[in-house]
Image (cartoon, rainbow, N blue to C red):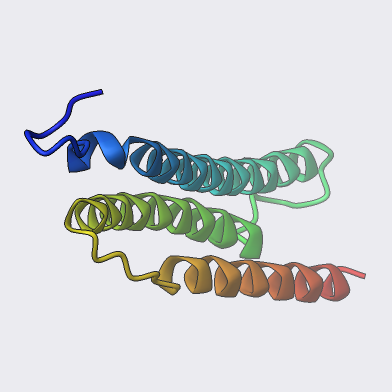
Amino acid sequence: MAETGTGRPLAKVRNRRVHMANERTFLAWVRTSISIMAFGFVVEKFSLFVKQFAYYLGKEASPPPAGYSAVFGVILVGLGAAIGVLSFFRYKTVERQIDEDTYVPSRVLSVLLTLSLLAIGAFLVLYLVHSL
């Protein structure tokens, strides 16, 4: 282990595990953002599939206009991208705070994700109730 002249380990070496934990947390946020974007993509493409299937079966004279699910899918893709960018900024902020030994927890990203999931859940419930 690298040491200073006084026998104490260097700050960067001492905080290696903390930095690795920060990186794992960042990667978990990246996986979450990719999952949200993938779900949005599937929702948008599924709405397109349903519209084309209805058109093919002759239930509609022309392709119907974009519905809620297409808009919802695009919003989900944008939300996933925003969470990915915010997680990178949070990762870099925590990295700097670890090096300076001034870590202060922030709940902004967690609150954003929780509110987003609440909004998604509420929209899906309303959408499913409306389609009954």
